[in-house]
Amino acid sequence: MMRHGAVILWLLHSLSAAHGAEQANVIVILADDLGYADLGCYGSEIQTPHLDQLAADGLRFTQFYNTARCWPTRAALLTGYYAQQIRRDALPGLKGGGNRNRRPEWAPLLPAMLKTAGYRSYHSGKWHIDGLPIKSGFDRSYMMRDHSRFFNPQTHFRDDEKLPPIDKGSDFYTSDAIADHAIECLQEHQQQYAKQPFFHFVAFTAPHFPLQAPAEDIARYKDKYLRDWETVRQERATRQREMELLAVPLSAVERNLGPPYHFPEHFEILGSGEVNRPLPWSVLTEAQRRFQADKMAIHAAMIDRMDQQIGRIIEQLHLMKVFNDTLILFLSDNGASAEIMVRGDGHDPEATPGSAETYLCLGPGWSTTCNTPFRRHKTWVHEGGISTPLIAHWPKRIKGKNEFRHAVGHVIDIVPTILQLAGVTPPAEVNGLVVPTAPGTSLVQAFDSADASLHETLWWMHEGHRAVRQGDWKLVAAKGDPWELYNVLEDRSEQHNLAHLKPGLVNDLAATWETTAEGIRELYPSE
Image (cartoon, rainbow, N blue to C red; front, top):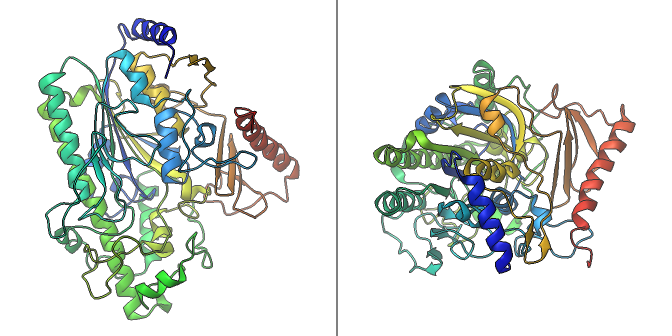
């Protein structure tokens, strides 16, 4: 908790700064394990008309990044710090750090800061952050903690209070329930708090495994993917070039790279239709092709259903007559996942794929396609793991329509963006602790100008995977591997490793990576 004096000083300063500010309503919509190329407006064949319309009437960022994993991204998105800075991901040389660690006192979540400017804050969906939503500053929350069941979750909360489990056979579906709660909060806001601005964090659990979706949505895609996954990938890349989103050659398929974690006993449960490598389609058996096609059809259905629910939220904004005054940001917490495992209620191979009795994962074959044109997957900090779509829509302020923004950005930029729009200055001190300078920068300048420059340097670390991007150069290494060097202006698909040609640059960038890491360690000198 802040000392009383610090609260008063921060409150007075922030309210003064907020006077006359735009104070836009803000909705941040976060997908879970969505690939860079999984939306129609980013090259996909999946039907996402509502998100496509937001993109057509707003901006698409082409070089926006996350942290490669769910909980570090959420921590960074709601605090404005790298996850390692706030102990929400591990760093060699520091004790702890990760999914079960708590943030330091000097790192409140965004809603706590927005309260000083009169904002109401709402949370609907996945949490995966330390603490509880209401205690962290949100005014209302529906928290989905069960990430293994879309039809009958056993652990979910309303306003930090645990709810009864959902019975099998009900008409419950998680994406629908998340949207239901979001709409309920918006309706309540209109009825009781219409004069106050709002921030809403809508965190869908789709299309994260298990691949489960309503039968009517799966039916629309049932046979669509009964064809070579590399052909689908090439078609996505072609659309990306034709829409002038990217001019990036396709990365080579890494045939020997499988899931980041190997569960041989789970693989046996799934049966002979599963494959844990992105093999050529031609070598798959008919049973394997059917199994893989069904998985991608469910993945597509989950994204389709999420888009339908986003459409319902958008309609509510129209009914409230605040659509034009609301900044909507849409992005993903990491790239598509190559993981294969069985959790929750297990997997019944006789059950209909995508039903509550099944537990399927996308796997590396289709994940390679979903991350088109980039290399690797969720967990890795190569481009496929850390690149996300970012759609920005705000009719009142963003004048560009159907425009691209090529500025390099990161989820650490979300907090400073929203604070600027709210007129809030972050505290310099919390409970006697000096608040470190946050690494993010506001995206507002990129809303206004296609020539905006946001970052010269960005840094990544997750499970031993490391990267740093400085200007047009990226240094990256998978766990246990040597550094690789790429010119991402010319080779963002990371195909031409120049480390042997530019050892001096490798050393310089490696030193930059270590300087950032050491700066994080210095935040915790007692360790």
